[in-house]
Every structure is written in C-alpha cells, then in structure tokens.
Image (tube, rainbow, N blue to C red):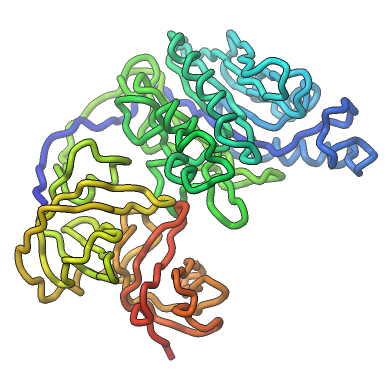
Length: 478
C-alpha cells in the first residue's frame, strides 16, 4: 500500500478550555412519597430512608467534584428536591436546571459553572410515560452553546421507542442556530446498527436505529454527528457493563460545526471516561472544548490512500475497494485472514480459492460488522502475485505488543501464554481475554496452561477475544 507524506495543519490549543460531561447517577430518589417511585425506593416501606439518601447524595457529589468537569448533564434524578439537595453539595456549580414529565419516575438535570441563559423541555409523546429532553443554552466566554440532554428508553423496549427521541432531536437541531452538543444516556451502542440487527427482541425497525440511522452518528467530522467513542481503543470503549459485556450507552455527539474552527471547537482526542462510579453503575464521560480560534502549525504525518485500513473506516461499500499485495496468513474451510503492511481483516466464507502464504491482489465488494468484528463477505478479481515463504513473520507477537488495542483486530496472534479458566485466558499481566470457538469441543480443559500459536484475534461487542478455529491454534504449555 502506498504511503503519501503530506503537510497537515494540526490543532494546538492556546485558548480558554472547558469540559462537558454526562453522568447517569443511577436512581437518585428523595425521601418524599410521590407514587411514581421504583419499588425499591418507596420511602420507609422498602427500606429507603434519609440516611441512605444522604449517603447517595454525598457519593454522587464526590464523583462530580473529583471529575472537575465544568458542565454536566445528569440522568436518573427523581425530583427538583433531589436536584437542589445535590446542588447544595456542589457550591462551585452556580447554575442548574431540572425537567421531568409529570408521571415519569425520573428526570433530567444540568449543573454548570457557566450561566444557563435559556432552557426548555422537549416532550416526546404526550400522555405516555416518556422522559423529556432538556434543551439548555449555556454562555461560555460570551459564546452560546446549546445542550440537548437525553435519557432514552431502556432496552426493555424495542428500537422504535428510541427512534422517537432521535426524530425529535433531528427536528430540533435543524432549527438550532447555536453550536450544539447532544449528550446523555441514549441506551444505544455507538455501533447500534451492527448489533441491533441480530437482536430479534429489539429490532422492530428492520435494522434502523435512532443513533446511527436518524442522527447519523459516525466517525466522520464532516457530516451527521461525530461520535468520539471512535477515538478510543476497543479495550477502553465502554461506560457501562451489562452481564460482563462492555457497553456504550452514554454519548457526546458532535455536529460538523464544532470542527470548523469558529465560535466553539471540539479539542480532538480529548474524549474520555472518568473511571470512578461512586453509587452509579455508569462511568461519567466527558470531552474538552475551546471558545477561541485555534492556532495552526504544520506537522508531517502519514496518510494512507487505500488498503485494508480503509475498510475499517467504512460501514458499507458504495464502490468496490482494490487490495494490493495482501498475504493470506490463515485459512479455515472457506474463511481466511489476510494482511497488508498495516492491517489484517477477516474474509468470511469467501476465501475458498486462496492459499496460505500466497500474496494476492483482489477486489473487495462487500463488508459488514458482525457484533463489532469487521468482515469481508464478498471478493472478486483475485490475482496471484507471488508465494510469501516467511508469512509467519507477519503474525502478531503477543510478547511485544498490547493485543487489546483496536488496531490489532483480525490479526493472527502468537506467543500468548496463560491459564484457561471458564472461558477466559488469564494472562501473566493480570489481564484476561475471552477464548471462543463455535465448536466447544475445541476449547482447552478448564485450568490448563496453554500457548496460543495462531489464534484469530477477534472482537465481540467491542470486547477482544481469541477465536479458535481448530485445535492446532493452541498447544498445552508446561
């Protein structure tokens, strides 16, 4: 793959910065009975009392103070009283707002060190127990920033309910004149379109999703809404765990206006999670912004014109992509792993004519994401270039690299030693990685020490795992 060196203007912030975050505090109920409480938070009757309430308030306030974030959208607060009681513990946040639909159990809050100059409640559907969206305008350094703070329906309900929120937001942002941010608990993964289509319970929309289809959340800063989860490696890409599976329900979505170097700008690669939960089951997420123009300086960087790397930037192919000088590292039945100078990818059930160790040119016609695993499902125009005698040198040496980084997805990994226990390979660095095989008889014996000699480094719901295709992929280690 050809590499072009060119001059790119990089962003060096010299202006005033501020941070915006989102935090689901998990069921902050006060001690007054309103009749809309969840069962476990009915005062006195279910053991919920002033002492527990006070402790929870203090724990939430502790997380917020330690985060030192300037503007925070809050979810799962029961009442104005609970909002005021929390605010009392946070004197550095002079401004706050709260909205809630009359019969809902929980509402939406906002705390800010900057003035809140306007706000309104966006109702989704009258007469039904839907949570409202809080729209608020904050003035930072004389610049207006509109925040749309959300808490979409949980995944106990189908995707059509979340699409209602996305459509309401889509209409609102089209009318918005200020720079804006969409944030909150959307109860949707960053790649929801890929994961939803395999869930029959949730998928009542033929694969369409609120976050990806309606709001066009993606990894492009020029259209739709950029989702900064793409800036993080798979290993760190989560704010919540459901039954041990990493999830990204919490979001900060950014329109192209925040990348035009005018008014307010997002500081690239500043998105992160604040890894302290307190009483919540969510991590707070946050991002950094600046109010002034950004100084530019030239810097030499690399730009890859094509190749396998390009496949990871796309969800679907509008036109075929030609791959040159790719080597077949591994083949099992009709599937294979191929690699160029920079990345590897999985050919799923379309590799019957390929040979291990050979170098090819080919055309990729179709790709898909299977629970966050990038797959090529259709190829054509296959041309043999040469036989690659030492192809095993292209395997990923687990002793030399961090296998949990996103860029290593679909590599063939070797020299990985650990103890297999109940589905996980426990490594010497106190980390563990899931071992998976469609044929359970291929899995190692529980408690055995093994060495992965040619494992498929895959990904499932953004969690790295080793996919074993045959027993030759590992051996007993003594």
